[in-house]
Length: 214
Image 1 (tube, rainbow, N blue to C red):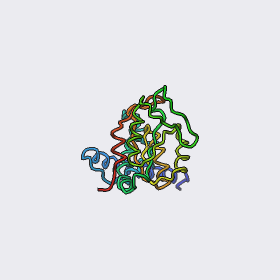
Image 2 (image 1 turned 135 degrees about the vertical axis):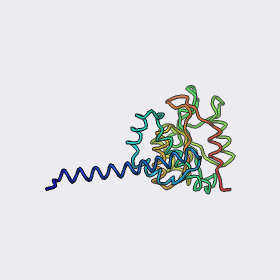
Image 3 (image 1 turned 90 degrees about the vertical axis):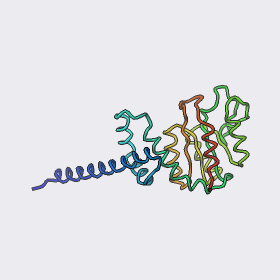
Image 4 (image 1 turned 60 degrees about the horizontal axis):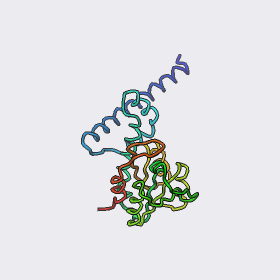
């Protein structure tokens, strides 16, 4: 006679086999995409990355992959998927979100409870030049003091597209918010993360801001 534990064991084994098959298929698609620079079935890859996020994150770190590899891969996939949607949004209906950690330690910007840090374009960092670039596109820029501030900015501006800069974890968390709001976005990873004086490729930001329909 088959016991309840036998049935549960069979169900668990079946689930593990299915997950293993899904992971194997996703790994093939990811490897092919990385080799050819052509992303295939990005929706399926994103589903796997989201559904099995924590197991994959633990597994890749134990296998020696760079820290945040799954976050980086997920961000790249979402950028690819959102490219077309973002390209259709006029510049003046997009916003750019920058982390406050890009500022210099002696930054003279003041903090507004509504708009975040208000840059005075002192020239100590490249944020002022980037804001001038965005002004030419009629595109608003916000330097946010923390992740919780994003919801306030979205509620204030009601953007139709968002370009965000941050570390890998912040970009993943932000992408989940955008998925919920059904707003296309693009994530630009910091080249040096941390709490103060982080670094980013400003030319990469500008290219993302200029994405438009051909």
